[in-house]
Image 1 (cartoon, each protein chain N blue to C red):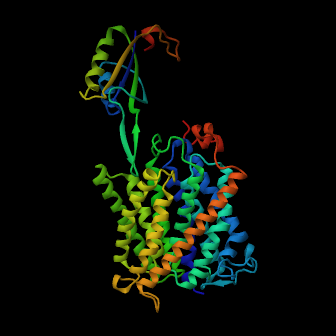
Image 2 (cartoon, rainbow over the protein chains, first blue to last red):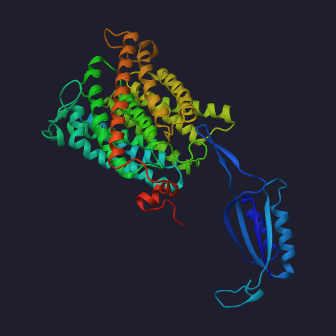
Image 3 (cartoon, each protein chain N blue to C red):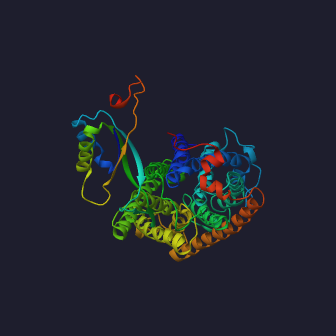
Amino acid sequence: MKFIVAIIQPFKLDAVREGLSELGIEGLTASEVRGFGRQKGHREVYRGSEYTINYVPKVKIEIAVGDDISERVIESVQNIAQTGKIGDGKIFVFELSEAIRVRTGETGEEAL
Amino acid sequence: MDGANTAWILTSTALVLFMTLPGLALFYGGLVRSSNVLSVLMHCFSIACLASIVWLAVGYSIAFADGTPWVGGLQKAFLMGVGRESVRDGLPETVFFMFQMTFAIITPALIVGAYPERIKFGAVLLFSGLWIIVVYAPVTHWIWGGGWLGEMGVLDFAGGLVVHLTAGVSALVLALVLGGRRGFPKELRPPHNPGMTMIGASMLWVGWFGFNAGSALAANGDAGMAMTVTHLSAAMGSLVWLTIEWVKFGKPSLVGIVTGMVAGLATITPASGFVGPIGALIIGLVGGIVCYYMVGLIKHRLKIDDSLDVFAVHGVGGVLGTLMVAVLVDKSFGGVGLAEGMTIASQFGVQLTGFAAVLVWSVFATYILVKIVQATVGLRVSDDEELEGLDVTSHGETGYNL
């Protein structure tokens, strides 16, 4: 199993979710996060004072998938989340040692 | 006594209280960090409560009871001798008392903008209570309570000097003694909720109808024209601020347009009973431009952290309106005309005298009061408390819980 963490542009979340649903992915976790990479921050002006916003809003999605489908999931996220501009985000992939469905106690890929 | 007049001033009283609670509180609350939003709401709310009691105890009497040209007597302390049958300016005196109380509430609450994110809560209360007695009530007596500036013929319809200059100047003095927020001016957090600021500003705009049109103390043509010019100046000030930002930064901002609105409103306040619609447009235009550049001057050049620009917007606006009214009151500008025996020049001299007197007293008395507060309860929270935010450290609450 693989655990995939993707940091993406917030406005790409719905499209990514749709793409993953087409692959048969049945769940993911999304959170609003802030961070910086090469995009750096931006400036905002209030009453003539400039403020540097160092942390840019992003969405983090977390998906646990079986090994057979993980390549296609990664490819799908990358294709859909891409705009080609700086700030599109990153995808991190981890080996996942165990997954447990809380309701039934099922383990492994059965639990995904 | 006239029922219609009484009804309008009862309504105006509610409108002006609504300016502070929740208008001004939300306007200011949106401009601070999220970890200080409750403290600012708390400052405005508690000042409203405290000012009410102080106004009943001595404030009203100092401002409006007969006395010397400098200060009223204490014969009306706790409204002694004032009952249901008492009349003042053609209104039940209780109504006049309540209407004026809402002004005594919002004026110290305006000063909240000078000291958010770093002041001790005890200092807010002690300073505000003393300030109403020592600065607000006497100045009100000078101009509206039968005192020397009123006798001289100073034109201040709804409080350019009484409200906006006293609050603005005192805010500047307090900010100077208190010192800036940590990280000022380079490393500050931006306003945490401009939407909240817009909602509060909109309530201020509506409430200002009671403030200015209510100051006619009657339901008549003066009130109608005061409402008209108030509204027009607010709209003009907003558009002016928006235009400056659009040209200068490429983007017109929400915080900018509502700040322009307040500038337009503060500037028209002293003139609102005396000028016509064309005068209102001129006042909104000048108020918007001058207040915009004063914000930059105070914050960036002089590096004084009057955090929410009380002086640059209210103080400066109040003075501008007070001086411009000497010209715009003239019939040739659509105003009501100068008082008999007055010329534009002599009226301007009177306005300048009023400005200078209120300025000097506000600076002097506020400085003494701030020093008293500093020596007793202290002014500033510790660095750690400031970093964590006043919501948790002063009030034990959090603005935004998940």
